[in-house]
Amino acid sequence: MQALARLLALLLLALAVPGVQAKERILWLVRDLPPFTVFEGPRKGQGVIDQLLPRLIEQMPEYDHSIVRVNRARGLQMLQDASNFTCDPTLLWTPERDKFVHFSQPMLGVLSGGLVVRRQAQAMLAPFLDGQQVDLKGLLGDNPLKLGIVAERSYSAQIDAMLRQLPDSALSRHYGNDATASLLQMQQLGRLQLVLGYWPEVRYLIQAQGGALADYQFHPIKGVNHYQFLHVGCSDSALGRAAITHIDQLLPALRRDTLPALYARWLDPELREQYLEQSRSFFDGQ
Image 1 (tube, helix red, strand yellow):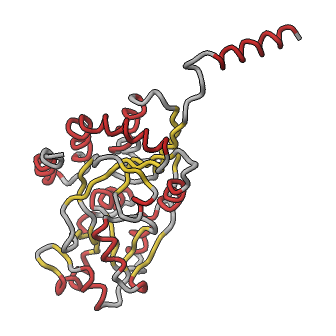
Image 2: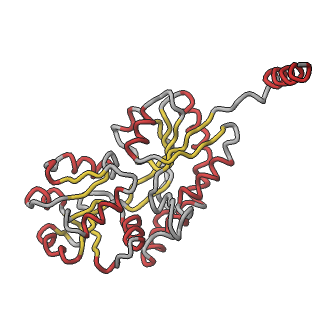
């Protein structure tokens, strides 16, 4: 009994000492999303965010940290609950998300999404091409085609607005954890003709599935900016806003010296130098 009493006294003393109180815990929301996070395969752990997140965590010792794997729909649900202290390191800004997410400054410029088509179906796009860019509304408004998209995923405010103008019958939404990979498999089986995606991600997934890149063609979407920008987004609460304030202090050095090179490794070789050159001016004037 005396030993128990001494233990309780020590615990009470520890709780009374300043600086040893429990820290707030950030739940970092991640999903399998090459080239940012890679959960399995030969490049496991080599994604841009796989390597960024430990650096952020190391420089934010005032918090405890947990990494939680969720799909996009579940992640957005958690961010909308202000009682959760959650942050997502791979968010695009959209007007809808801005209602419940507190965003960091832009973190990384990435190539915008576009249409992935198998080469044997390439001819159907020809009337809707301007160079390599495709008129998405014209293509899907005039043809009984199916476009595969990941449910609840934003493809940028510009592309999201285009998708809202399309007939719902033209869209095939997938909700799973491996949604883009599943959509590519559905495309191979002929269950849909087009997949909306990001070429670095799709390129990796095609190769992981044993496919040949030569069997596919990627087309940027007409009217969409060449680059879009990722942010860290935290739940819009006092804790989330305080975390973003700290993150904003860390990002300028990371986005200048570290992140562009990590992303460039995932690009087609002929694009890497062009991207690195252009990335130097992404944040001029900020």
